[in-house]
Image (cartoon, rainbow, N blue to C red; front, side, top):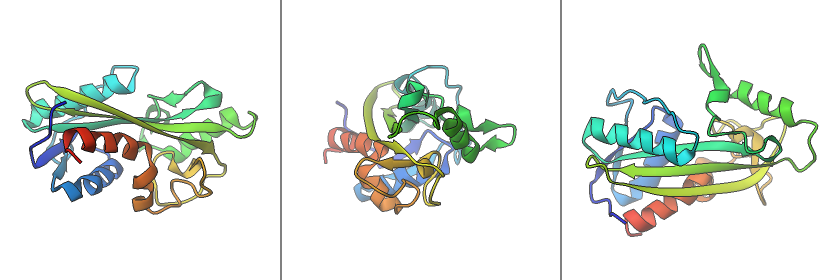
Length: 201
């Protein structure tokens, strides 16, 4: 397992929500994060049907474009009653001609499962890929299980956060403070493995 010794990395994403979360998680390690968007790096086409495949595409593209280590995050919302959908295609479900519309995507999910048995189980999944300009990479995966609530609640999260409560919690991911979410989220689960093996914590 390769250690990350560089103090600056690229987040292979144009998503400001992810940038904020990752930057906060890496700050205690003295690592600064710049987004691919801020460097003018375009988003490559995600042609794989797995989180790992798409995470690798994004990380390697950003690493080669910037000549810096690049961290990518491919994550999704997996609904039990939909056989795991939208999953890898979670962002696609929110696509419109005017950008991503997650309230629309959440409504789409609800319309498909509203008559399914309670509890309506779901989970968030995250795959992190750290890639270096020389082509080496490391993969870390995490998830958090819970259930769907309707109507959506909260304004603190992003994506499908307002319709998800983690097991053992009453508040949605959009109702809890970001710092609290960072301790229990799918991204935190994957990130803890990344820090353990690549940052030596």
